[in-house]
Each structure stands twice: as C-alpha cells, then as structure tokens.
Length: 470
Ligand code: NAD
Image 1 (cartoon, rainbow, N blue to C red):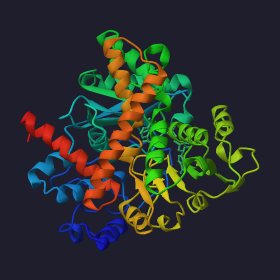
Image 2: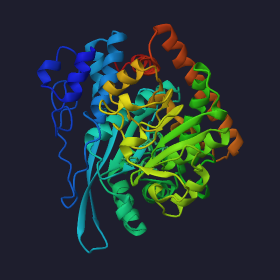
Image 3: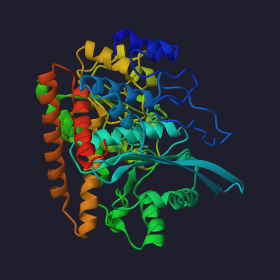
Image 4: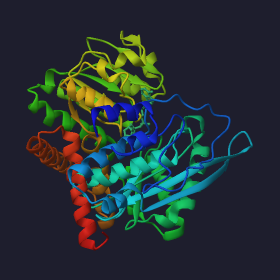
C-alpha cells in the first residue's frame, strides 16, 4: 500500500478510493468490513445503553490495522487471492448473549464472543478480554493476530480470541464470577484442550480462568488443560503471570544489541501499568533501566530521576492509581507521556494508542509493543522514517502465549516445571523468534513487522496446504 493510501486510509476516505490499493477503510463510527470477501455478518452486539461510548483512540480500528499488515505481507508473498481470502475471514465466530442479574437487581445483557481465526497449526489459542469496548471486530482482529503470533514464535497453535463487553472494574467479585460462568456456559461447546484453549487478557486474570475451568469441568470432568493462566493452586504454571512482561524485556535486550544500547543504563516509558506493563517495568528495573514516565487509564506521571516500578506496583496492587503515586514525580497529561525523551517506549495498554497525530512526538530509539495493535500503519511509517526500531506486537508480546503453551503441556502430563525452567525455555523461544525475524528483515531490507508477518503467514500457509485445507 502506498504512503498516500495509508494516509487516506487513516482519514477514513471512501472505500472505493481504496479498493485498488488494499483493504477498504471504515467510515467514522463504522466498526469494520461487512462486505466482499472478508467477514460477512454485521456486528449487532448488544450494548449497555447506560454506558458512554469511549473516545476513539486511533483513526482506524484494530481490525483494519491487522488487515493492513496481512494484506501487505500477502502481496509481498504473492499469495493467490483465493488463498488470502481464507485468512481474511475467521473459521468460526460465536456471539452469545450473557444476561446477568447485577447487584442493582436488574438484568444486564452483555455480549460475549469467541472467534477462532485459523486452526491449521494446532488447537485454537487466545485470551479472553473483559472491557466495555469489546466488539466482534476487535475480537476478530485479536484472533487473527494470534494466528500469526503463534506461527511466528513457532508453537503448535492456531489463533483465537474472546471477550465480553463488560467493565470488570464496576463489578463485585460475585458479579464477575457470574459473568464468567454464564459466558463459559454459552461457549463451552467450541472449547476444550484439543480444540480451543482460552487464557487471560485485558480485564481478566487467574481467578477468572479458575472460574472458567471450574464451569467447564462441571460438564466435562476436571480438565485443567482447557484453559491457561490459572492460579498456581489449580495447575497454573510458574512464571505465567510475568510471562508477557518478561518476553517484552527479553526483546528489549535482543534489540538493544542492534542499536548499541546498554539496557543497564537505559531509560524507558511505560504506557499502561496492568499485568504486562507492571511486570515489564519491574524486570526492566531489575536490569538497571530507569522508568522516566508511566501511565494508566487514570493519568500519567514523569520523573527524570526514575519512578520506582516495584513501589508503584505495590501502590497499584493496593488499589491506587498511577496518577496518585506519591514519589516526587510530576503529573502530566496522557498526551505528554508519548513525548518524553527515553531510549525505549513500551505501549502496554490498548490498541491504536500510537497514531498519526502523536507518532511524530515520540522521542525514543526503540519501541517494543507490549500491547496488541498499539500502532496504526501511518504511525508505524512515521516512526520508521524517524529511525525508531520497532519490535512488533506479534513478536514482542508473545511471552504470554508461550508460557500458556508450557502450562498446557504441563497440564496434559500432570507435571510441573520449576520457574527457572519455565523462564529459560521462554527465553530460548523468544531469542530464536527474534533471530528469525531480524534475519529475515535484514534479508528483505525491511523493518521487523513485515518480516514477522511474512514468516507467520508462510508457516500457516504451509500447514494449511499440507493438511489439504487450501
Ligand atoms: P490490564 O488490564 O492488566 O492492564 C491494562 C493497563 O492499561 C491498565 O494499567 C490500564 O489502566 C491501562 N490503560 C487503559 N487505558 C489507558 C490509556 N488510555 N492510557 C494509558 N493507560 C491505559 O491488561 P494487560 O493484560 O496488561 O494487557 C495490556 C495489553 O497487552 C493489551 O493490549 C493486551 O491485549 C496485551 N497483551 C496482554 C497479554 C497478557 O498476557 N496479559 C499478552 C499479550 C498481549
């Protein structure tokens, strides 16, 4: 896709202007593609009418971001149109009603989704997200990302994702359990240890996975391998909670060599301080790096002398907000966070947060994508033009699914590895994947993202064609 086309695309120009060049572009307020060879069904998700729609983060949806990268890689690989069409839509999409009576005595109807994008390389695998903005298009995008991610790091899974459009921060523990059990009940037919294995994502955690396993077990008998990211007490894996953050930091270490950066003296900015952000920040600090800015949904803070990631994690664990952290750091706007000078910028919040209006303001040498689809195509182009080394989401945040794979392997054999063993195996796979992607990028003379997609697509195409699917 040409530079102009990307710009047009992000400004939401008419679809027919784009047709010749690539994926059509959603108009403002439109959630995704509902025609042509892609997904056919419009998203008729139920909405909780009392909730205000959140402000748009980027010019295009996560779905369009993933579709853009797939389309570009498929063109470079000269994938025939009919084969590409198979990957532009999902194998199966389940949308269910999740009615739950909440503490206010009223019945609230949420929408739940499980999308299985492609299973050529193994059982479907992907997280479950609880967030008010979850909709079918977002889940589709995240499911497709999982197909490429598991192929890029070469673990034997296909790609899936699930979600419920609920704000877990507004629910009591009992209500959250009700939502989880009701949702599990509605989708259990498409799950199972050899079929589709969920895991935590935004807004869900080990406790939610425990409820999911328990609900699934009521119907199928005790089946710990039906879900990963479980508590240690329920055959969860050591190292799973920290895995995505640990993988992100591993990628910082690998990439640092390419730009002659010494991680021990480096500065970094963390956008998002949940599971991924808080672990990545603490592990960066362990390496000797200094966090000079950090944000969560409540606000952002900056401090040239460094913000203690361990103390901030304790503060957040006790229910505190990043913006209220009493450390001598200065409160800043979310917008100012991206402009802080640092060596490494780590997006670890929502998708689409680095876009055409703020990409030029980033002052980092390297960006390592902890979040899924944090960068729009236009922003990616700007950052590449500014010489920022980008380690893309499909590689950088694969640590979580890699240790989920280890958890599944341990569950299937009912044995347990030590944390050291888990971390060593994780590092080995992440290092191998980094090397394969960076070698290909060097051969292509391209950034790492296109190289990663090419590698992932090639592997999935090979598996699908040897099976006789395509
Ligand atoms: P989480 O819910 O634990 O944390 C999300 C964080 O982002 C919170 O601190 C939240 O306050 C913050 N946030 C939300 N809106 C923000 C905004 N506008 N500005 C700044 N911060 C904001 O979620 P998580 O599990 O850490 O996931 C974060 C990202 O990483 C998501 O994109 C997710 O898909 C991706 N990811 C997670 C995993 C995993 O294992 N948890 C694996 C791969 C990818």
